[in-house]
Length: 128
Image (cartoon, rainbow, N blue to C red):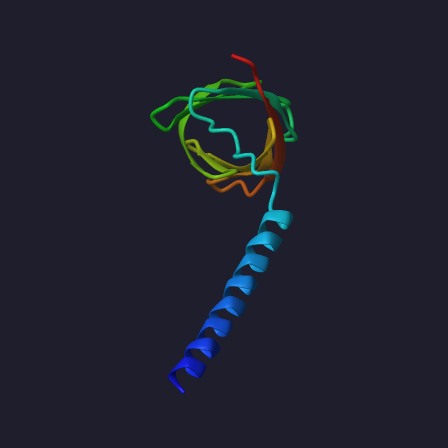
């Protein structure tokens, strides 16, 4: 009787092990190529934004969470956070929220004051 219970328990554990292996195999097949997104600290990105009269756009990211934005009007300091492929960049009167896909970061931006304008932007990682 004890032996029969041990055999049943062993069979149940084997089924669970096979099921776990299949789940892991599916996860590996459906997950991205295993490439981690670029860490933005210490990098520079150049591109453009759709906000009227601005066009060109550059972001520089320091190691300490500070960001510099250079656009058609001025150079502005702010801060950033990165969580995986998501980047959140905050300046005095606007916020840029983007996603990194390979060597391109793109997303949406908006003003934080009374102006409710929204626009899109895209920048490409620059070689060091």
